[in-house]
Length: 336
Image (tube, rainbow, N blue to C red):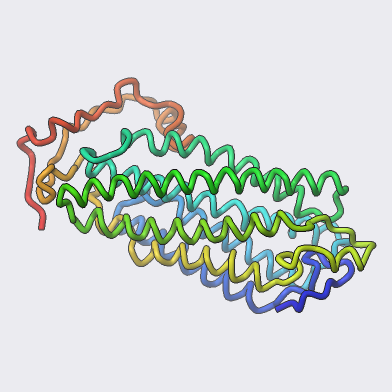
């Protein structure tokens, strides 16, 4: 890893490691293949599709970083473009993984709706809108801050946008953990210990914790001196250690996000939750009850728009699930 001594002209500020990007490119590619296979095997594309998307983006980001390990001088236009693209691909993925967690929690609330702190369908709508704002700030901030040839004011603006995105993301994580803990406590008090609930919830906590640590690292990184002046070697030495030492990036960014991707490979929620979203757990905590499915007469484009906007737009007019009457449905079946 780089020893913290800046190299004049380097886009990374140091001579980047040439082996680490290969490892993470292969690791994320393997995780992506695993996610794609699991989505197909468990028919869980609707539930977990953000994970294969993020893993593919990570793969592209680290593949470009490997290219940058051999071509890291900023005065080459192609090097600069690929460096910026690599940074964007790597930095936009954690919010996507966080959004995937919100999606999984919403699915668990659909399965046990009696103890949901808020309507299950609202989880993705509320957090999806907030994450769309975060992704916008993140993309703009990364593109400005990652360009070392930009003016001081542009780099500062990029850093401030990134800080705003990270601070907002940190606040949302706290709210999310509170929401999940409230739901779990209600289940425990009611004696609901179904594996389809307990296992995904535990993985959600681990995943959210990893994203939280990464978020704190990125905040610390941007609260230091982040303005790059290539023509001033002494100023480069005064930059934040989180920027000058490459191991920070690989420990708190690359490794944490790889672990996050792998744990969902191991404990894919499609293994535990019913494929049919209209199957719910009855109040006895053991019996599964299948609710009545409402016909979806929306046009195909509206359905696609509903998915792409994370449920915020193009919803059905009467997307109401009367969970209180689930126990009255005759189509119920016991499940061990």
